[in-house]
Image 1 (cartoon, rainbow, N blue to C red):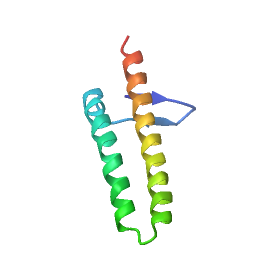
Image 2: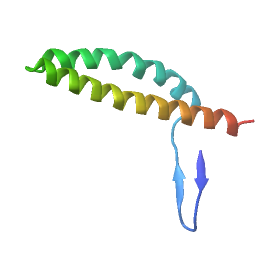
Image 3: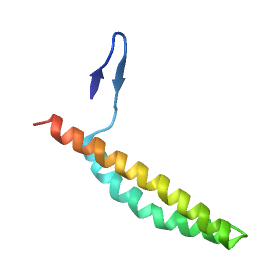
Amino acid sequence: MCEHFSEGEVKILKISKEDLEEAIPGIAALKPILQQQVRLVNESKKQGDIDAKQIGKHFDIAINSMITVLEYMNNSQK
């Protein structure tokens, strides 16, 4: 996908729709695993919970961004 913006500005996304469709569930499955790891390795339970919540938020943003790009790809093929 190549999109032209203002003069001299081009943004290229080198990812296939199929790869993105496969990656979303994989990333979603990693979220609770990594959150649990963060809780386990942190000496402070309170800080571990804070860090796990923060990493969960980052995963949610990444997953939502991937879904948005996938939806854009689906709509641009129509």
